[in-house]
Length: 135
Image (cartoon, rainbow, N blue to C red; front, side):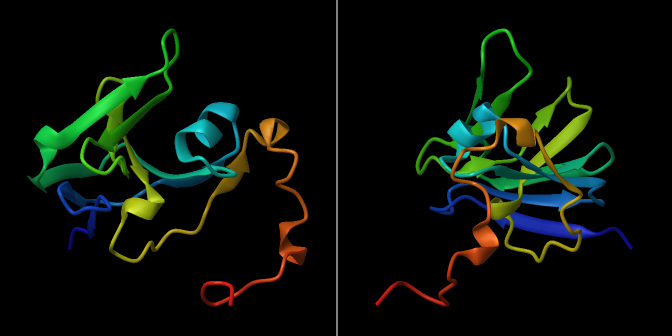
C-alpha cells in the first residue's frame, strides 16, 4: 500500500496529497531558511520518489528563488504559507513539515547548517514550556 500524506496552507486555498515515503527530514539553521520561516530553522521533508497531486489551489502557488542559488520557497499567494515544491529539476520533492495535516511518521534526520544557527538558538531545552498561550 502506498503511503498517502495530506496537507494544506493556512487559509485552505492550497491543498495537496503526497503518495510515497520521505527519505529525510532536516531542520536547517542556515540564514536563508531562517529568513524563509521567520524562525530558528526550517523543518523540511525530502523525497526523490514520492509524487504530489494538487486537489485545489495549484494556481495560487508562487515560487521565489534566491538569485544565483538553488534556494527556493513556494508559498500560497493568499496567506503566505509555505507549501511543497519540486526542486532539482523536479527530482526532489521538498515539503514543509508544518504544512502537513497527516501525522509525520519520520523523525528528524539531523539539524543542519548549525554553524549558521541564530545566537539565541541554544540551550532551548531549559526554556519553560506551556501547553497553551501564556496567561
